[in-house]
Length: 353
Image (cartoon, rainbow, N blue to C red; front, side):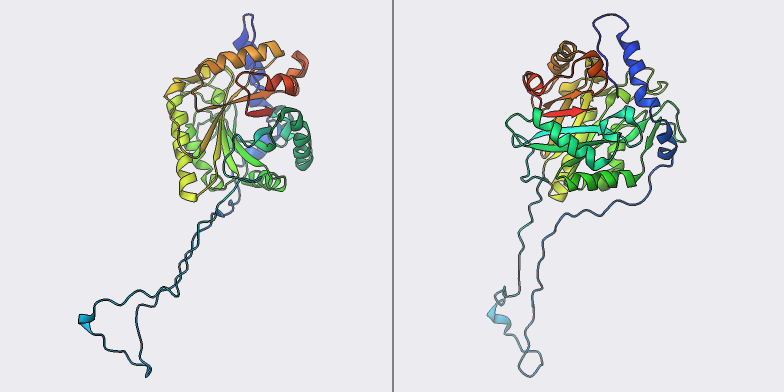
């Protein structure tokens, strides 16, 4: 998921050379990933109401049935054994049911065993989350941080695979490990999807058993969504506002059916052409849609990309911003919290890769 914006010619070629790291850095991890999913996800913990039994008959003192006068009309209901439980309010890990304006999201992305794919894939997971929370204080502004673990769950690669989709699902045990870590630190988990030739809605539905949990959302990476005849890493992929809206509608249904707090849906964008007809996207209740601008380079270049890509942002979509530990440091320096929070519009989700 490397991003590149250059003022001189050859931007796409250089960007794709950077971008191929998102394909080839899987390295030793690819053999594990090709093993596919394993294990079952936990059942949803969504609560349900309880209704007690109602005695709809009467018995005489002798144990036989009493006679009922048919002209007397129906007996009044006996509510003595009826209990009605209020639906339990399922909250976000740090309280409440709404993401904004209570929190600022701050996260790391990555995949275990693939350091080139992001900070989250380096070293001990709990240590990385603790590092993330400490680093996030600089970018929090006047709000508390809600930590985000953005795990690359559907990994694109330059070979088609058995189904011809140019992508692999990571083992479910890795998803469970990251969800457990998110819960230990009162954060949320986002499942990042690099779909290859698959459709976003099908890839998101694949993770439904996780998405019915109150602290799991998705992050869509359309740069890696390619069409028939295209190979990821050789061209920029793309999606449309209608396709993004289809995912948002599906997530909204999960929120309603399972009485969940607001669910996060991120889509990453490195270049205006990566999301077409963006204004066709519709807003759906219970889903917070975030557009993460992923420009790479010196602060001036990143700001230009941020301003350009946000020109087509629908009003209901929340702004986000990505920083890169390695590339931004080389081409940078890395933007400070004050610089990031000074962007207009101010980012609500700040992500380090």
